[in-house]
Length: 200
Image: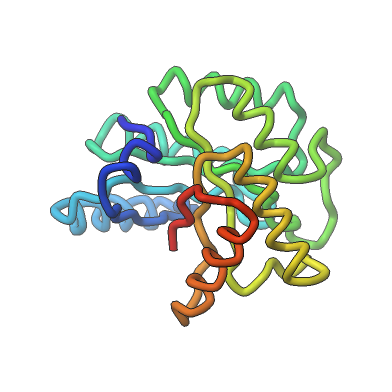
């Protein structure tokens, strides 16, 4: 496996994002999908994490499967919602032992039903700092070209992202339809002195 910043220093990358399957049939679909796109030789793949706070263990299962059954570089998503620091330490130890070298550190979606579990983290930055402190992983963070839905305004959104990119190695954007949003994001970050990669 390779660290994503090392790839970004040398080439334009191709990646895919996978949602962990929730049923045996979906597991088969994932296997068929991986086989169908294997020839595209993605530089890395990211694995989402318990959307809505559910089924977090499935991310680890998919990452473990990909490490053992493919030649790909998986990057697990990790969210701060409802986590104790001890849980994060244990999970990062597991990933490190698997040879994982990249983590996408996120705030995460609110749980289904809107009831948030108590945890030791309030913001993605808190989780990011703990991941970086291990010294074991390259770290990515989320970027929102059209501004994070909970940001009070565009300027504070960009300053917050710039603060995260002072710690993280790169950002990966939410999906967007018009390239102008991404170009503007990169330009606004550059005005704040940010030169880290922002992957669309």
